[in-house]
Structures are given as structure tokens and as C-alpha cells.
Image 1 (cartoon, rainbow, N blue to C red):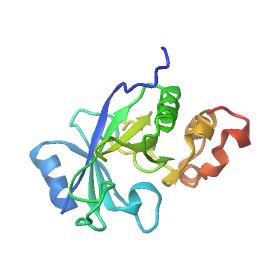
Image 2: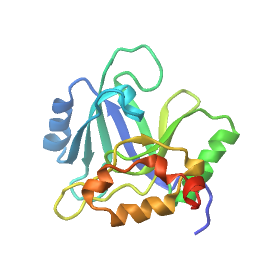
Image 3: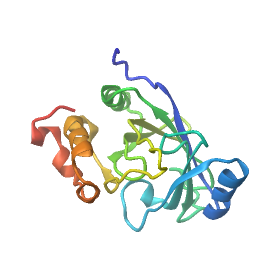
Image 4: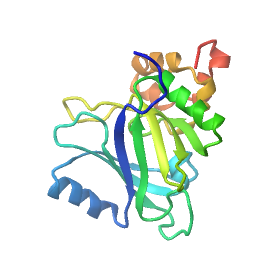
Length: 203
């Protein structure tokens, strides 16, 4: 498969809502989707936690992908500005086929001076990803290898949300640890140990 740094498919959509429980009931009870998990972002966490208070991650009735819809409540739903801090569309996520595609697209954003919000790992879905802005300021997420949900419907354990530098991220070591660590140790993973320049791996 050629590495092109292009989007393979639409991954999921994130929306910000006024009442998380009400929205979850609508998407699960009315539309028949399945709740994978709820998540409280807490204070001062990286990424969504800056603006987001809590989230619910929902998938289709026959889906094994961790989530197709992210539903968020915000710390300040009436904040006047940008960065997906108001009710409505929060972000659109696109899936890439390989880690190389993800890094290539990340580098393209940098080379073309397209705004990058951040890059990170961990949290629900536990996928390596970065966030950027389109010309109108909409938040776009680009990711590779989101978790699948098994036959029992239980989501996999994941490390805390941590910001990373994709240009210096050791994907090979990350995948090795993902499959070898027990859940307790995996939940405590420190992303600073996954710098390619430190471990001798490659981004």
C-alpha cells in the first residue's frame, strides 16, 4: 500500500450538547445506537479537557469501532470563540490507513502553515491522532488505528490523554506495549518514554 498522507475514510463526528444524558438517550434509545463508554475529562487535562467537561462515545448497533459519534458537554458552552467551545459541531474525524500516512499529513500541515491544535494519544478509542483547523476554523481530527470493541461490548483499557510530538513518536514501541502490557500498567503509560529519538525507534 502506497503512503500518500491522504484521508482513507470519514471516521466519526463530534458534537457539543447542552445535556449529555438526554443526548445519549436519544442516540441509543431512539436511534438504536450503542453506548461504548462515558468519560469525565477532569480538570487541567490535555486536549479536549481544556474545553470539554465530559463525553459519551457511541457506535452503530452492529459496529465494532470504538465510536462513530462523540458527544460532549462543555465547561463554558456560551464561550464566544473559536476552538469548538460552543454548542453544535465539535469536530469531524478522518481515518488514515497507516501511521506513515498520519505523520506525512501532519508534516504537510506544518509545511503549509495550516494551524495544528495538538497531537496526542490515550483516552477513549486510544488512537494516535492530531487536530488541525480548516480555513473556517472547524476542528478536524486525523487518526490512525482506533480501538475495536470485542464481542463482550467492553472497551479496552487505555492510557491517560497525553500530548505527543508525532514527528518524534515511536509508533513501533507504542504498538508493542499496547499488546504486551497488562491493563493496570497500560493505564499508567507515560508518553514521554515513547520519543523515537530517546528509544532509537522511528516515527
